[in-house]
Amino acid sequence: MKAHPVPTPSAWVIDQARHWPDGASIIDFAAGTGRHSRALMAMQDRKFRVLAVDRDADALAALKAACPKIQTRCQDLETDQAWHFADRQFTVVLVTNYLFRPKLAMLFDLVAPGGFIVYETFASGNAAFGRPRNPDFLLRPGELPASLPVDFTPSDYFHGRIDRPDPAMIQRMAARRDSASPTPMQTV
Image (cartoon, rainbow, N blue to C red):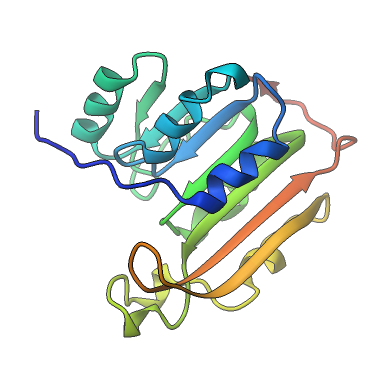
């Protein structure tokens, strides 16, 4: 198995966890080596249940070996034909350093009523600092809040430069889905 370094989790993401209920079901999309999944599971008093999803089977295997309580699922969100989450919802949908606009609405659909979406990724202007440079992978100012379905309320939003761990242009948003949203899906 190939060694996978685990970057430091985003302090902003970890800070958002204070809003989530104990025992929350969390899906970590594009989890990679599981930097956030690991940090959330380390909050043992919170009893979070985490499903880490990524296309890199080796990274997920390393994550599972290091943290057996984290569930993993190998899926390429861009090329897999089947969407394996159509009948599921989670208390928290977490996405960092990843953008695939064709499935953005599907990610919002995964948030259970009263649940949260926490999204942090690269934004326009990042080309000045490195990769990604392709506009297909960079959020435009205000894009995340503008994409929210009407039954979500943003609680935190930022678009700009950060300097840690390396300089980058990012956009981050936390939003909560109304508790009264109808849901025919199974919450896990």
